[in-house]
Amino acid sequence: MSGNGEARAKPASIRDVARLASVSHQTVSRVLNDHPSIRTETRQRVLDAIRTLDYRPNLAARALASARTNLLGILSATVGEYGTTSAIVAIEQAARERGYSISTLNLPDSTPEAIGEAVRLLQHEQVDGIIVLAPQMRVYNVIGGLGLTVPIVSLQTSTGGSAESVASDQVLGARMAVEHLIGLGHSDILHIAGPQDWIEAESRMRGYLDAMFEADLSALPPVRGDWTADFGHFAGRELAGRRDVTAVFAANDLMAVGLMHGFRDAGVRVPDDICVIGFDDIPVAAHVWPTLSTVRVNFAELGRRAVTHLLASIDRHEPPVFELLSPELIVRESTTAQATRR
Image (cartoon, rainbow, N blue to C red; front, side, top):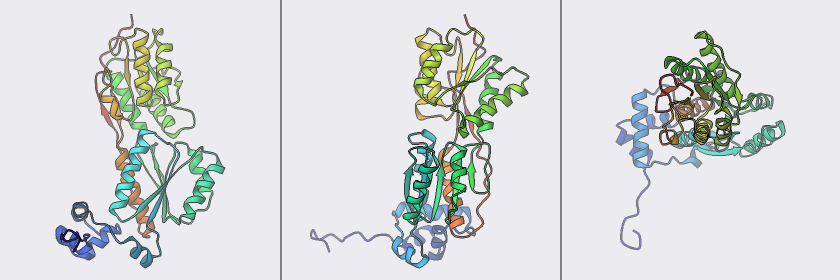
């Protein structure tokens, strides 16, 4: 009894979870270990019970029994980027539900020395596996040459992935954005691309070029940006005087928002004079003026898939093969029928 006479709350046990989910405690254990034999409905029922009871597995006991630390590492090279942040939140939640903790390291830069030092720090923490979120292919190339002894999975937002990666189809997403503009009657479409050598930038540019080619339209030379709203604002002011463009596909929403601001400062109206579409569907996209048409990527689902893939590898099971995650076109006020530049 506590000092005030009230019984101290007893932490939920694995048997409490089993009772609430109407399964055996062995089934709960299999769900916690991500065993592939569990039906999807059963797994969800157990996970719901774990959340309801706030069940916390005894990590120390599990670690002693399995010679594991129950710690996963995240190596991130895109600090503050919306997609990466969303994925990390989902990774942490999915890991906790399966009894794992997370250690996140942010790369200061993508030099081989910085990557090697970060990997050594994670290995020093004795992580059971590593999830890599990086914008440039050279990061993956360096990691591939380090001879890691723990399972690794890369969360990519590119055209596809290897057996060790999960990915969204960003080429398709870019094509959807450009085809939306073409469907509205636009033929003079400019692309503001991301930085060179970035996986997302190259995938989205490829989608732009594919859509223009298939529509038998001439692609304009792209403008290389840096993902920031400041660059978009600068580009909007610079492009305001051009009369050969009626629509712009920006490689991310921040540049698109800045672009609309730059156009507005220069007296160019969106969408009356020129249309703008972005990519990512950041939360503010639905609240700027005009509201921003964009392409939504389910970064949270990518994070959950990465955890499922990695834990299967840690348990020496065959990792699931995920299809490319399809993006979704979100049409708002910044795109309309072919604009007329005056």
